[in-house]
Length: 187
Image (tube, one colour):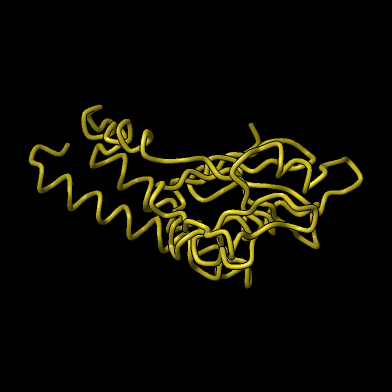
């Protein structure tokens, strides 16, 4: 169990390194790498349980309350040619942390629903809901107002505005999914 604030910070830094390694590795390349990923996840879970990070006090867990007030929900339209493969959707969602340029990002859900047109026969389209800081949004001028093909207004984000912890859910024709430990889990 952690007793000092410095110990907690070190433990959180180690957990963050493990989480990033698990999230960014080329794990789908072959069975050997998938096995290594599984071992890393087990090692991280054992570390979290032994150190007691899962029993972390609420005061340290809840600094998001003030951050939530400064964040805004945005909706990003996505396309995946292998729409029935949820592992591919998982890769697309995780790639949002690095690549948002050229993506259709809307500030309200009705616009993204109209743009995506989810149906049982069209599994190649989905959208993801993310929370980003208000200052991560570029202010559009009247000359550079971005719109999609149907004239709905689009939002532009600064680089690295999306973080994995701020990805709220993926809405797909098969249901809604949450990101839990870098995996899509159906609600």
